[in-house]
Image 1 (cartoon, rainbow, N blue to C red):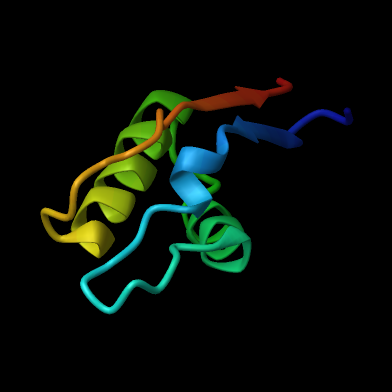
Image 2: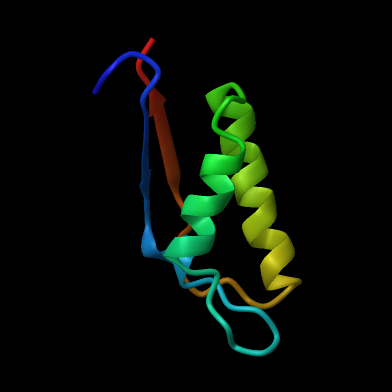
Length: 74
């Protein structure tokens, strides 16, 4: 990793979270959400991504763990 790089490690419960139409949050959406907010402090970035997943699922039951680990090299 180079200075400024961001590493995101996640469980499939994030990408496989579904909305009311049974559509998955997906890897592309997760990558896009992380990239759009990459300048935020990692603790806030993590909170915002988890909130995005929760908003996407809109109260649908969570059937798998949802874990996100973010590491930024300074």
